[in-house]
Amino acid sequence: MIPIARPQMGAEEKERVWEAMASGSLAQGPRVRELEEAFAAFIGAGHAVATSSGTTALHLALLGYGIGPGDEVITVPFTFIASANSILYTGARPVFVDIHEPTFTIDTHLIEDAITPRTKAIMPISLYGMPAPMPSIVEVAERHGLAVVEDACQAHGAAIGGQRSGTWGAGTFSFYPTKNMTTGEGGMLTTDDADLAGRVRLLREHGMRVRYHHEVIGYNFRMTDIAAAIGLAQLPKLPGYNERRRAIAARYDTELHGVIVPTAPAGVTHVYHQYTIRVSRRDEFAERLRERGVGSAIYYPIPVHRQAPYRALGYGEASYPVTDRLTAEVLSIPVHPSLTDDEVATVIGAVNETAAELGPIEPRAAAT
Ligand SMILES: Cc1ncc(COP(=O)(O)O)c(C=O)c1O
Image 1 (spheres, rainbow, N blue to C red):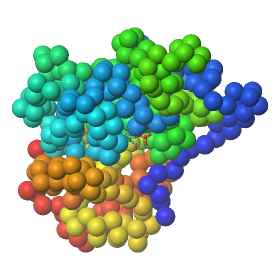
Image 2: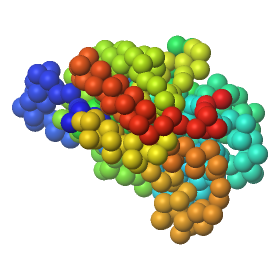
Image 3: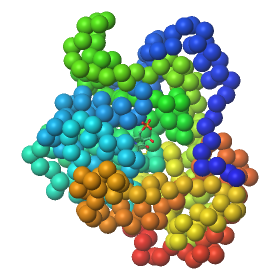
Image 4: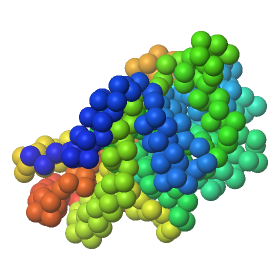
């Protein structure tokens, strides 16, 4: 079975981790600092703050902007639940708007209508490795005095016009094992705003700048030096990983038939954390791919507003037509950098044969 993800761990990771373990520096230490500096340089951001996960990076970004009870943050329901949960953790309320069909990211035309006097921030999701339309989001945010927290947890190295995700306000990244680069578990916040970075550093470590002098109530959201050691071995490999993902995606773009393939607007560098097609009879499609030895996954089978805790909060009845339609059609196929050319050919054959058997997706749903 060709798996949907296959984390890459080599001799460099082993060596770096062993070095960290042998040094005795196991919690947050010099390797975390080194990874922060290297990641900030890679992204092109002034500051990077490492955290225990992408979720905690999101949570701290919002707290760093002073967001809390009574506030609203605009985001989308077509994402992993952590995006919206991070808003709830602060006591603020997520306000959902629908997505733009061809790109799976926030529909910027819907943002302005969702702004109220309580709105404090916009949280676009750069989903599947496709950057959200950050320039127009920043423009709306500046006009209304709102913060921008880009959930770039799936978008390491993605860019618009050469400007990388994570440089448009605050950006957050996840280093979960299936991501474009990993630290096992881990996350990162990037920003050019030194004050924001300082507040996040403080909150990350129990509000402590001077040992055991606590300025505010903070958290333990630290990354370990062992995790950072993995990240230091992975980061130099990220550009090559992303190039391989993009090369596989380019083959899929031209060789897949009977399905809707993802499209990246001109000037956008998509890093294909996922290669997500749209198919008819999706569940049957996935089953037939499995029979042909090809793994696939649905990201995500239930949109956030219809998840049980959000239904309990009263979000369940709202209608987001594009989100609902795409939720029923999306299927991600393997695009990870360790795929061999033979495996890529197997995936292409399996998708094309299955689409021929089940029929092409209805033109009604075609991307416009
Ligand atoms: C879009 C998105 N946001 C947030 C997260 C949370 O990251 P983590 O799993 O590292 O907490 C993820 C990770 O899966 C994600 O894909």
